[in-house]
View 1 (cartoon, one colour):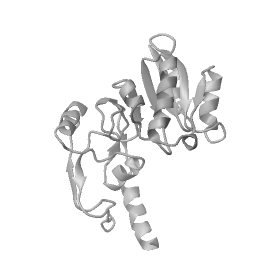
View 2 (cartoon, helix red, strand yellow; view 1 turned 135 degrees about the vertical axis):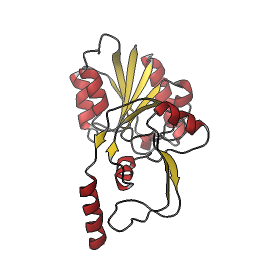
View 3 (cartoon, rainbow, N blue to C red; view 1 turned 90 degrees about the vertical axis):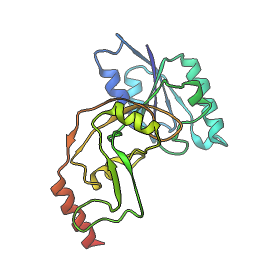
View 4 (cartoon, helix red, strand yellow; view 1 turned 60 degrees about the vertical axis):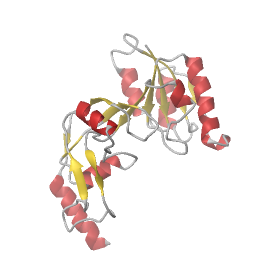
Length: 220
């Protein structure tokens, strides 16, 4: 199975995959695509270089629209003839993957999201911290330990709580006592694709979070 990674920074997920004993056995990383230059994504380029991985560079500033940008990415993806595309920190302008690249690689783009996507619910009103608790007001949360059930709930119109760039921070401030990463298929909506697998959950020091919340309120 041929794999291509998209990265904007240190490409930590690509590094782990390249250093795995399975690399060269069940899969092979055949290339990478970056939306930043060598100066702004030096670590990621170094990871690729150390494993003789070709990196194709597409700077958003060189394109007039998201569609034109992803048309160029699609053409390069086609040249690599990859089976799977992994997201290893895809940030900045045009970070939400869309057509024509998304349509071309439908169900073949995988993202590692740093938060637990099984947490379902919604928030009403402004994000206002309660005194000393570190939680947000007006939180409606439906917890499930099954990502298969979470996938079904999403299909029926419910929302994931911890999506986007600040997902881990949000989870901690909402009072979650454990966090984990979620690997999911990429779809048009940010962090809304079906969950494939999750990491082990890591405990959060909730007492420390409460102290920080209280201190921040005093400083503010």
